[in-house]
Image (cartoon, rainbow over all chains, first blue to last red; front, side, top):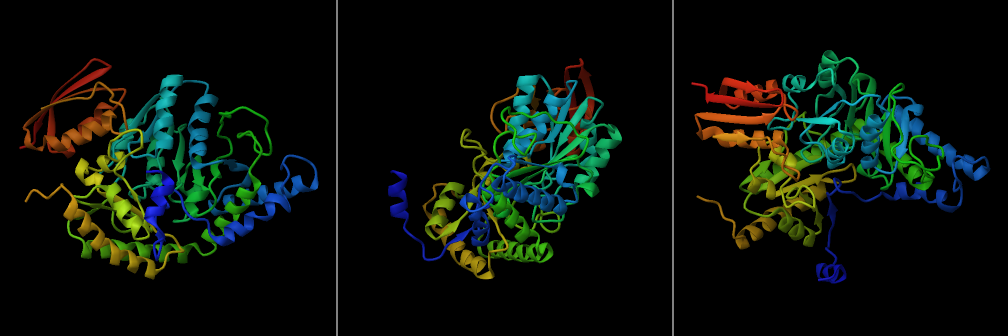
Length: 404
Length: 76
């Protein structure tokens, strides 16, 4: 069936609720409006060129750096734009290796995003660096005492995410930084904060990190902007070559309209961060409780309470395939993703869920919801009206039955 | 039960740390476990902590600088 035919059969649901922020999301109207002038009315020039449209482009480019820097207690010169969080993670890891005068070891965790894990594999193959992955407990937390055993004099770089993208675990990065520096004062610490930014307070000074990754589309900005915070003094080498524009570590002309949209998304996310977090936490807890109360045989993946980020609900619905749930819910206008496959290349369940001890069959029925400040209580109520019926229908037609 | 982690398997869940955790959970019905691993993949001290967390203790260890073999028995 072609995609066109698929969409025709699917039709337009009466109500739509989009929860798949993990994979990308809608861009609010006010963000789209902030971008539009920069396509053809102002700032459409190259920000490195000395004329009015170039200066206008540079103005929004630099103002966005200042704004992002302020939100994480950094300086604007420490902010580097790439075109995605994946590129920022590549720059942090690969750029560090290229700049390093000696080969060493990189320590990361077993539940990192693919944009870290696959880069580590490549660094190992291409440059002969060692890398080691620290295990996590059943909530996805790195145990500092186990972490300490991985750090030695050869450890030059560490990359541990601040919030896990699938199960929402908030890692105690400050404690891990302290452990790492105690074992090796010279180690450089990177954290992938893509799923933390705009969902919790982040202060790079307080965390003690040297590099930190942010992605625009994870805060409902447009796709196409990533940020790498690089603490002054940390040396990176560009990993791509080409004509430099305003950015010195990432060649190519900056996408100014997209950066302008990202700026607006940051303003909206941080305008009243405390209230936004409270709102998302309330919706998260309503959704989680509602599912547990109305659907039998479910498991919450990840921690419950303060160690879970405010927007994340990850549930395994036993005896149903995750893909079947995503399609069934899509027909009802509810858009979610499944952790049933780690990537489309491998027919294996999510590495994150297996790492926290889920069995294959539990991981296969996992569904990830991410709430935003735009979701309403009505959205959650509508979702909770649909889910029990959807799961019940799928379980009735599933060949996979409980062994009781 | 023998847990051999010396060969890296492809895919998202083929890393020795992932396989060690998964196999240790499966080892709950066993009284003795032999774990073979490369120290480049997991430090010996980390394996020992994980083994203890799963209710085993290390009876004996043989390490040649690259590969380690831990002989573990269930805590009584």
